[in-house]
Image (cartoon, rainbow, N blue to C red):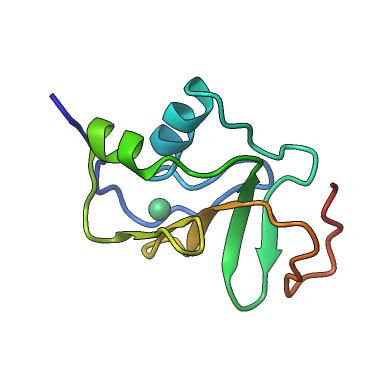
Length: 108
Ligand SMILES: [Zn+2]
């Protein structure tokens, strides 16, 4: 049976972890070979919210097999990105040289 993402209230990302809605998603991605960029940590982008980068393509088929995604979780396959619109938090594939609206350093 597919796992449901619980619709808990807004809870922002911490310095090192995505919001509670994206945590189970990240767990499944990592259990299946993707790697979160914990050296860079959560990027706090002034326009785009909190972003955690992952090193590999996000496997959307895998996520659809595991989860019944609520509509506040938005998938963007072109941008290799999953966004929680409730918390303005996302998981995104790391792309070399991509600029973020932040003074934080992205570690490659
Ligand atoms: Zn969330």
